[in-house]
Amino acid sequence: MEISIEVKNLNKHYGNRVAVNNLNLTVKKGEVFGLLGPNGAGKSTTIDCILGLKSFDNGSVQVLGMDPTKERKRLFERVGVQLQSSSYQGNIRVGEICEEIAALYHSPANYDDLLAQFKLDQFHKQPVAKLSGGERQKLSVLLALIPQPEVLFLDELTTGLDTEARRAVWDVLTDLKEKGLTLFLTSHYMDEVEVLCDRICIINQGHALVTDTVPELIKRSPYKRLEDAYLWVMKEEIAV
Image (cartoon, rainbow, N blue to C red; front, side, top):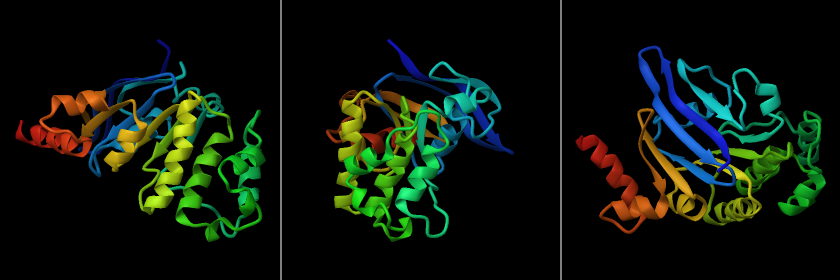
């Protein structure tokens, strides 16, 4: 079994506040792994630590066999990242932002092909600011695919999108999943998680409550839906 991401005993504090608490994760190659939890649970901080964007207090992280704190430049040639706070300067056009991102990598994907695949080729000369929410989110995924990554990180990708836009993004991710790309995502939408994820880890206050497949987690709970099983796990934690 090939491992894409391995996190051992990860800890991160902001002053006296614990953001990540002795977290352990393993993500297999080709797996879609979901990191779930309420707002403030430590999901985004965990992704930042895994990518080497934030330092951590102790523990270890390996992504594709690399230490992100020491080999971040080499790592970023092999991973794609869509973060919550994706923003674009001024009136930059779709084609221009694609060209800018492609220039950062040694062997970028052909972004014209990606624009066609994502049904965004008609917006080549359109300012990003004039895209709809769903189109902008698809563009975020497209940009994260320009490095031709082996692992793709997606942080709350479909938050704020309407049902049609969310479904369009799901179709893109399902296609990537079928092609064997490793996906690491966070989401508040349990239907989305149920459709996309092979395994999930539920965290609260930075520590893991449970890690399992979606069917097994549901089976362990008294419920038949992931949303109910998720809330049950959270209530059990509070009761303890």
